[in-house]
Structures are given as structure tokens and as C-alpha cells.
Image (tube, rainbow, N blue to C red; front, side, top):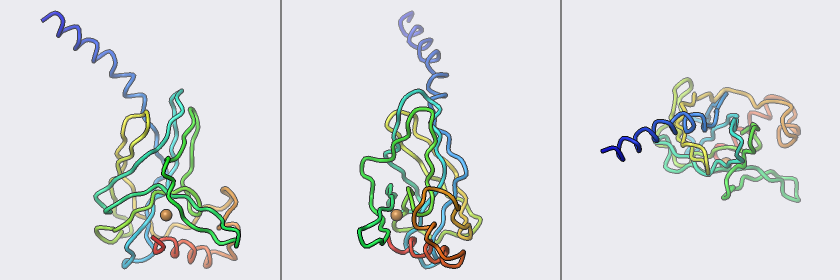
Length: 174
Ligand SMILES: [Cu+2]
């Protein structure tokens, strides 16, 4: 009995530490190219407030059959291509990573229903060290790519119209 009580006390003592070992997701949104698109993508910033280097290793949601962690690479021809990042996204201690158009993103493959502007989906993120995190993500198909991020596809865009086309292409590339 005493032993059990001690265990319980220990468990409660540990709780605050666990609670603080959480990533902070901000400015998240998801989008697809069109109501007919079979795939979409989610973008956000992820802050690692802990003193441990961590890694986003998986994401899942009922909104799609499969979620993958993707990035874009530039081929020798200059064409941007999406590839899966199997080792996940490194999030160094105390740092923030940005998932954005033309760069890192959470790919949603096999949408279970169209991503409707203004609605929300829930995505659960799994990290190497931090507690799993379920985050509500707003669907914003109309949002434009952020300018001035890491130079890539968007920097080559000729204007807003073209950039939107790039985004649209992304959604259907799968
Ligand atoms: Cu992708």
C-alpha cells in the first residue's frame, strides 16, 4: 500500500515536467487545390521550447488516408519536386521550424472528404521525444504563400496569380 502510494506520488510529481515537454504549433492551415483534389497539404510553425533536440516523425488525421512529411528539392533542371522526408523534420532545442509552401509540409494523401474553406481538421503529430500533440487546423484554400521565406519556388513566381498556380499544382501532385 505504501509502495503504491509512493508510486502515485512520483507519477504526479513527474506530470508538470511532461506537460511542459510539448511542442508549440502556431499559424497552422491546410489547403487543397480544388474541391476535386485527392490530396492537400498543411503548413505551420513548430516551436520546440524544450532543451532537447527533437524531430517530428509522423502525422495522422481522419481527414486523409495517409499523412507524409514532405519537402521540396530542386532538380538539376530547376524543377521543384516534392519528396518524402523519411527521417522527419529536425526541430533543434529552442528553435522554430516553418512548414510553408515550396518547403517543408505535411502532405495529406487520399482526402476522406474535400477540404472546405473555413472548416477545421484535427491532426495528431508524433515527435521523437515530446508528447504527441493533436492540433486543430483551419482550412484556408485561399491563403497566399508567404513571401520572403527561404528562397525557392515562390521567389521565382511572376506574381500572385502564378504563385497560386504553383500552390494548386502542389495539391494535385500527390
Ligand atoms: Cu507534398
